[in-house]
Length: 262
Ligand code: NAD
Image 1 (cartoon, rainbow, N blue to C red):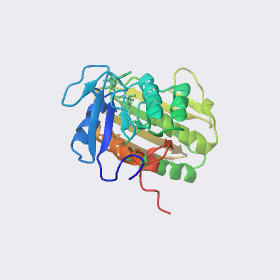
Image 2: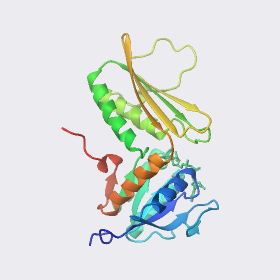
Image 3: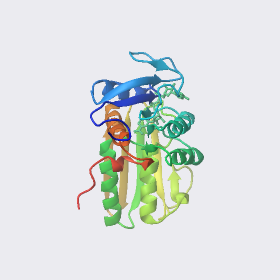
Image 4: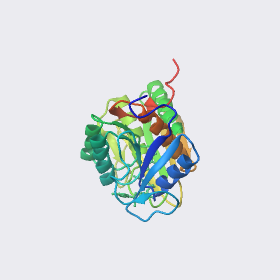
């Protein structure tokens, strides 16, 4: 027996934001995998599809269950508190949280396993590793990030773009002041200590991130395209399996995927 039930037992899932685009993708992927059993589907909006639907985020969260939430920042904070109180684990993918709200998720991780990721696709984990190598190999090159998403996305830039930008800032030793969100007006030459971030919105694009590293006479582009939400859903389920057996603590998708070679 592990702390969260016997190995081989299905992982008991509570999906928060279950009526949304991501919630539906996770429900579909989980329903197709016998390693999971969906205990409750939580949403403030009316849900469609089979299962036990509720508007009460507390319903179904019990010791040993795993909550997967793709919803809204206030709900992320609420379910993190419930998981900490009740001994459940949390996989959290909502973006656009304030620093204070992120702090409350970190506080919950003192009492429950919490895995946060701005992007649950495994390809983005590989992109971040490739970016680390490129930044180290190309000191002094300019870094710009272009992200594209569907027209209904609420927060800009995307959480993934911010994570990539912060990775570049950390590698270069610059603080958040060096972030440049779009450009407009007579700004003069680009400062060296700057990471540009540009958000495009339109149509139904699921998620597209390009990091451009520009040097003298050449540039390099690292690009990831999420073609459908199944990319994030499968990463979220891998994360759910991981936290189901993990002690309290704050985790990222890096903890789930195979460590880099070497
Ligand atoms: P969506 O608007 O389609 O769905 C969100 C759902 O959450 C809605 O059904 C809404 O009714 C529900 N909701 C909001 N507040 C709630 C509350 N307090 N209680 C219960 N339900 C509540 O949005 P989406 O495209 O599914 O994205 C949801 C979040 O996940 C966004 O922040 C988005 O940026 C993020 N996201 C993250 C990843 C990732 O890999 N980390 C991938 C895609 C989307």
